[in-house]
Length: 366
Figure 1 (cartoon, rainbow, N blue to C red):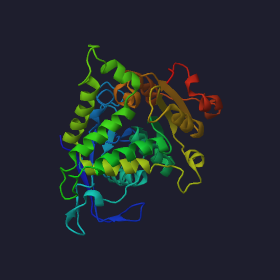
Figure 2 (figure 1 turned 180 degrees about the vertical axis):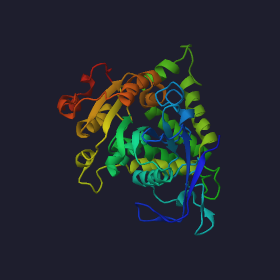
Figure 3 (figure 1 turned 45 degrees about the horizontal axis):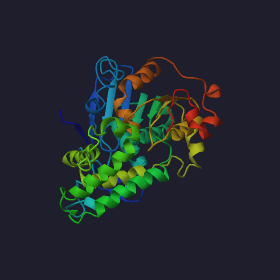
Figure 4 (figure 1 turned 90 degrees about the vertical axis):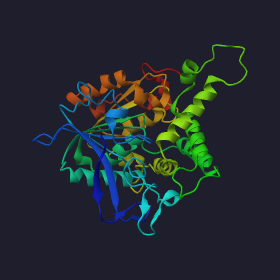
């Protein structure tokens, strides 16, 4: 099934000051909007995913699952800068008649939210029961909940943050350095930069997974082996796998967009910005996440007024938000269907957790 397309044939002003002459938004919907228009679930996808949430989040989206199209009208839009149908570096710059490539302007998380708002209005959505996202998707969700606080009844933020960290930016910069060092990279050739993108993905995998992940899945059966290790093969495989389905220039663009995330920009700081959220919030962290560590979810829960923090145990690191369906479902279902939320004044988040996150019940030592 191909995504639907919204054509915005007017200039789209970006936060960086530049303007896109027009904007195309690719999106999927599942289910139907009810008469009361109060059954909307909006899913924000992460870095290299697409708008077909039922494909990459199959454990959560579908009949009998938390995000059930028989009950809800589910929307997921491809974000600006991606290569899955929404305007990005693979599009032609109508001003000069050439593919954008590396000349595509800087897109921020706020620009992505602005595009979501265009689609929201196009679909006639006036209220959203739940906006949910993990990682970069969570960055969009929290930004949107601040931009338009009255729109949302509930938000669910998984393995994400209020401001991208120096650690996360450093990982992204290392990946961009790998791509830009590839001598085949040519803005007029959308298939160029293969080895650079493969190396970038191999770097990224080290932040998405965890020491324990590799120990469980890539350990050798033969202690006499001295070369061609499973872990080496796995890194090469992951790099080639991404190159076959994604675009190098979109990867460069989106990694910069992730770096731009800071809800406190021009709002008096992160804490003040988070306090503007009116929706009830379920915040989920992962014990082994080294890219978005639990401290970042604690900060979200500490400053979003009506929030509740949960931590799940996983051996998959940051990627746990994509694979730990049973644990996530066990938290999301009651939050979505009932008012399972603690009062902000009785929040379980406290200063001890900020300085000592492993004190959380059920967490493992890093």
